[in-house]
Length: 320
Ligand SMILES: Cc1cc2nc3c(=O)[nH]c(=O)nc-3n(C[C@H](O)[C@H](O)[C@H](O)COP(=O)(O)O)c2cc1C
Image 1 (tube, rainbow, N blue to C red):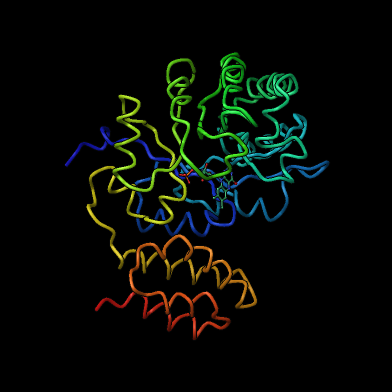
Image 2: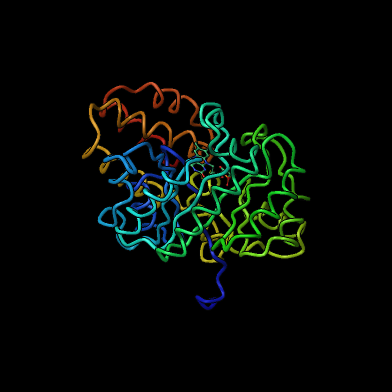
């Protein structure tokens, strides 16, 4: 067995609607192997740094034993700071800024990947939030894309980021118009490896050990830490596989993950159909693990009541 300290660091990417506190708790209890989790973004507004719903997601009470970094999406430094202060008061020492969200409504407001277009506004925003960071002892990391419409924007962005004491820079090597599709723009990540001064985290399209090895081959070094999103939801054993502690996907463990999340959602969400909507979203990731169950999945995605859903889930997990 490898020594614990030799294991590569794995971060769980934030996936809005998917990596909720209920998901994180279930994953951490059943699988472990994740060094840091990021919350899906919170969006502070005037006089409302954190909504009650967002607070529930972040509060340490709901994230026991989980190394969590709350994420903020905004282009207003006063909103960021008010929100970060509240997060600091909850006991957190790091907050993450979202500069990657590609959604049309978010970008139209100049937030997420939309903020990358206006580098002078971004620079003064960073001036403000890093002055705050110093005064409050709050670390700030950034999760970014390469640019808004052209990956070459990344050169100027790198210079801007290098002027501030970021605790980490997580790079998803795509531009906004790529959304989450197509090839990763690896050559720009290679540029980041050479020029970014703060600790760097790779994120994007790692669905298997082979994908990780391919990325490592391209860069001539293993990305560590690595942030995994869709790949880790689709195959929750991926973190164990990358660290050599599991060799295949354990469907019984997945069943435990499923059952835990399902029962926990039932306690906090109603009516039934809303719990089933949450579960269906997870199944869009998990279904790749099951062959020859197309008819069951058709039924599962249509189920409106618990008994029908539960019976279908049992059939999906039944191995011949
Ligand atoms: C459904 C969905 C929701 C997401 N929500 C967030 C979010 O709240 N904050 C964020 O920084 N990124 C978000 N992302 C982006 C992921 O964190 C990650 O950067 C992206 O999926 C690429 O990594 P992957 O290829 O490992 O999935 C989201 C992506 C998806 C598909």
